[in-house]
Image 1 (spheres, rainbow, N blue to C red):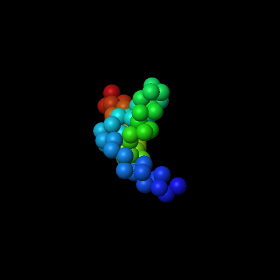
Image 2: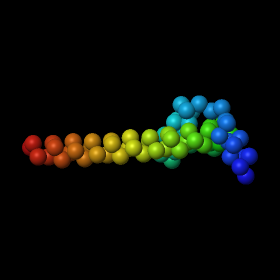
Image 3: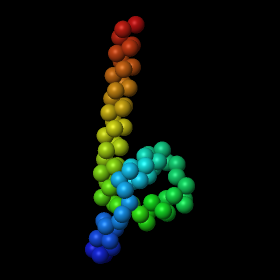
Length: 76
């Protein structure tokens, strides 16, 4: 099992490719052929980092949107 984890961590997929795969997964839209390709190429560590970054960006966008809506409601 540890050899499988070690080989997965040494995959050569780029962080950009991983970020794209994670972004598509946030929307829930992915072709099965692309998913299979990503599973064999991307680094699991990159997936974790990209997922945390994506979640933080999503939360920041929601906070910004709520602040903007509340701010524009008070001004009118």
